[in-house]
Length: 456
Image (cartoon, rainbow, N blue to C red; front, side, top):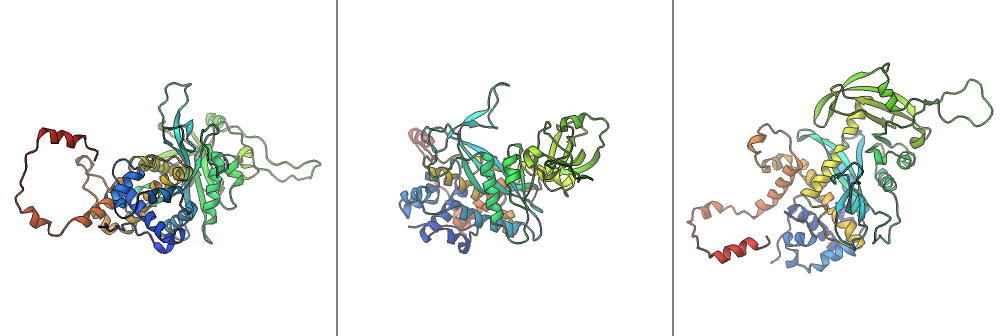
């Protein structure tokens, strides 16, 4: 008997139905829901077993959908981005996105795009040893959003990604040209910018690796970038128009300024004290803001540079910048602090939704399968926000050591989404069944051992 497929996330057929054929759309919806309901290892086969898809269709059709299906990832990304922008972002408020990369660890010589590469989460054995792991790397972009009344933290909702592979990878994608991580990040920025409607403004927050010439000079007009620069970066003053026109090529930048590391050591530097909301709490910082030209990375464009110092000495001295010269120091610091939300998303997507679990080897499957984990992450948050009045009642009571807990975490949202499905299978006559006396049958020792060794 075919089991009815639940619809807890409100995936709109009028939007996503244009991305697929009718049979493929049903598989897409089922995989998203199955990815959320699956507990433990999130392989494709386990999702099939969770949703019992093998009872209504041949399991090979699911693998064919991922490996050879004629559908475009970018179309799904566009639909999801527009839904999040319309529901979570107020009209007239700038759209903030976070850009970063993550490594999904895999072992195997025939995995497309896999290879030895940098892994920031790998333990460092010594000062000279490199942090490397074998796996598949994705450059991810997500919407950074606050959810007032639900949580004080910033959530990063991923919607698009690009596969990056090292040049020494044994199996390389055949349909994709090789690009560096900043080039892939720029592609995601251009793609997101093309999805904006009239009047919407885009701001990108990224880490040091993407604060380079490729992204800063190649970004679309009107898109501003907030990031971090090295203390040894070469800065120049703003170019002033000369009183008398001289012969020769005109200057492109002003006089050389001290490097940020030297500015931190300058005792005559004036500091301003501000209170900023970072990482879920209010902290006090000393800042010094100036306008400069970062010619090596940003060209002749003027940027706003902020030197940040913690008076308590808990945080290291940091140099931030923003291509929007009208932004205040407080806005720049708080916007860059939102970048950490994508690190939390990467961890939760791997641990709770198994983004690195699919055992795929072919090019399309390697790219598409992890996207269901990232899309499921965003769908769960969207569902929880839209159904908050009823979804909050499905959240389990906090542990005894979390009695003062006021914020809802993603694990709470995920548990509520799963309970919304499992509660459909509970009969209203369960109270009558509980009144019956249970009969307990004795089991042999061999049966108990056999049950323990079974894979559940």
